Image (cartoon, rainbow, N blue to C red):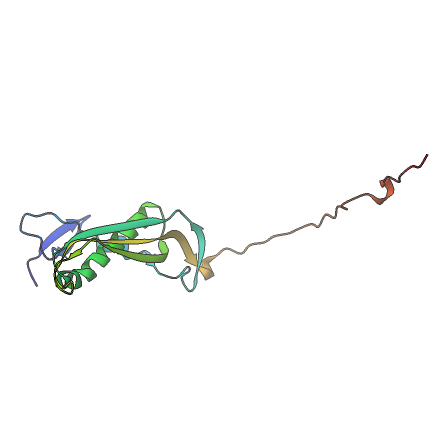
Amino acid sequence: KGESFVVDIEGESFRVHPPRGVQPGGKFRYTHPAEIHHVYASTLDSVPGMVVVQSKPIVWGSRAFPCFNIAGVASSSADILQEAQAELLRQTIKAGCNACLGINISVANSATAAGDYGQHKSGLVLVTAFGTPCIVVKAGEMPPVQATSTAVVTPLYNASVIDTPVYE
């Protein structure tokens, strides 16, 4: 399945396979597997068995790729979706979180049809993944919460001081 090479990161060696279309000497982004695989990623607003203890502002990851024909979109879609999600999870880590919840993916296409039925398209496809970075903990690891309360009743008015109209 193509060429590969070994990368040494912090004393660990990883075999890297460049994405399709990258020529020898070309550049591409590599995501350390341990980096994003420790982040919970879900389209749900919670992770079963976990409790959301903090959420932060929305983060996103986008990737664009040229589209020269419909077949190119079909063969590249999985790769581009994974790249957008990987960027989303990197942004989640930068926000200091261990989960990204409520993930959505948006696909925009600037391609123009040149054939009778649009079978020959060219343009740009933009994939954006976005979600809410959160800190989650296992429900069983939540510390017990002890709370006490005291009820204070304050009347809305004091009946003994109600003004009575005076007639002269």
